[in-house]
Amino acid sequence: HFSFFFPTDRCKSEIKSDNNTEIIMDTTIETPESNSSSASDANEERYLVLIEFAYRHLDFQMAEIESILDMHGIQLGSPDCRVHPLPGQDETGRTTPASTNPELRRLYLILSFPGKDASKLSDNRNNVDRWDLATRASENASIAEILSRCTLIKTIVELWGASTSSLDTCAKECGEWIKNTKVGKSIFANVASEKESWKLTVHTLGTKYTREEQAEMRNKFSYLGFQGPVQMKEPNHEYILIREVEMDGKGSPLHPRHGIDKNLIPEHDKLPPLGVYFGRLLGGKSKRGRGGLEQYNLKNRVYLGPTSMDAELSFVMTNYGQVQKGSVVFDPFVGTGSILLSCALRGAYCMGSDIDIRVLKGRNEQETIWKNFDQYHLRRPELLRSDNAIYHRHFRQHQPLYNAIVCDPPYGIRAGARKTGSRKDTPRPILEEHRHDHIAQTKPYAVSDVMSDLLDVAARTLVMNGRLVYVIPSFQEFNPNTDLPRHDCLELVHSCYQPLQADLGRRIVAMKKVKEYDFSKRDHYMSRIWVNGTASAEKCANLRDKILEAAKQKPDYERKAAVRRQKRKAHREEKKAAKKKLAQDNNEAVAAVEEKQS
Image (cartoon, rainbow, N blue to C red; front, top):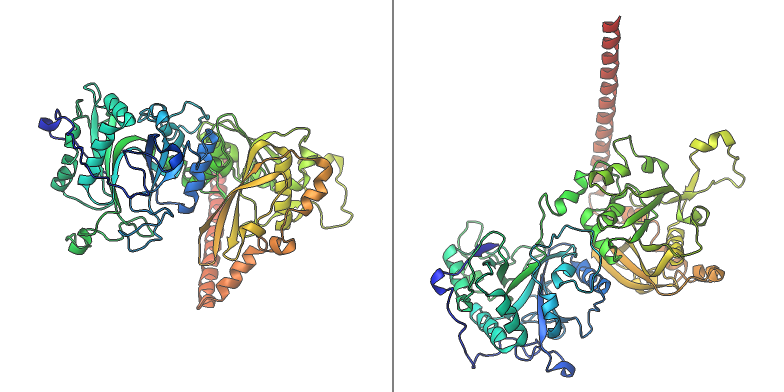
């Protein structure tokens, strides 16, 4: 981002009148004059909000927005909120003709709201703390307060004008919006007074422009004539000019303006932008330093395990589950508590269980789940050694309890699934004097049973409209319509797939409770969980073996496997030597103390 301000001799200029200003956008896109996308509300003005996404977890973005809007009583796709085509998009969302790739993923989304809600939604919330995570849904929340909660949103902008062609047409559209619409007139009157400080930021998505070129860009909008003082740090209002270009798979410009040698590439410089936007920044600017998402990074935590969930994805899952301040949340596969920690940061009351008592107790007094919560000054969770197969033996079920169940079930890739029980038909009874420190036996837990029990527990214990959110790895042949487990009391809300390798990916699934659980029908419910029976369950089972089989088909597998084995062996020997040396040093220290005392 580059921040600039208009020359002082132009700050007092008036908005120019131009009754012949051309309509900038495609006929499929709402124009400033009509602000409408259907005949039913052709005379209703619309309030447009531009969203810039972070270039991460692209397949999870829309589901997260939909969940957050729904949490605030706003249905995406209804007259109260619908998706508005970006400049250059047709009615199907395809980008033509500026892009050489009609299927490209664009970083922007425009949401359209009724003009009558503009005064509430446009409330300037630059001071909203993006990482004040413990919030509660409110009917009077501004759009910045609502969307700033989304983990994958970078910037939220009140859109004044947009164009597919040039800065000039974008600037003209801004003038038309301010001059010809009630919404534009009202907002401009509130933000352009002498008391309102401001600055203008030029955002070119990684494309470099000289200061002179940037000054020329901002001068296109000098006719707006903001009355207030320019203030570069913490102004009352920040305006942003965005030049959207085509991005590659890593979030960098596909056609960079300059080469590696920093020389201008003329053919790239001549390419038109995908879109040009101008508006007022409402909030959501991403912080990835110490004060933002980085402070919750796994590497900063005192207690981790091999299956600890990434912090960013955990926050996305809490949004899928609509976890908010005061929610009661349960994680039946809590492990080291990485998902539950994100729920606690949202202000939830947290409960968790796990089959492995050693994980719950931690490595030592300083490396436990509770220490992770203490690190962020959070209320400690309630933890219990249990599993879903025996949930009914450890918890009351007379009434629903949880607002959300958010978890990452074991599928046998990094950690195998196990449940309480003995492989023997007649296990030896536990003596009374051993019960206080007895660690119960466990036996393998089939993945099909893991998922069946999870959905059954969720259907029993979630409050009405409560949500179950879980992660499930899957291969490309996985069909979510027939292979995902289902329950008569739960409705599938989201199933978002993210490819990780050529054949393997992961899917975040969100389900909502829509019907009360009838305990007399439990057998009927369980018989219908897998649509295609064992064939569906098998696609979630033995994933580790399937991954190994696929890896063995790749060339040079044996040589690479031998190298990995050698590295693991060297690592084990190194750890063994370090442990031996530590014990030796401790013994020598104890001997020295004893010798000194004697």
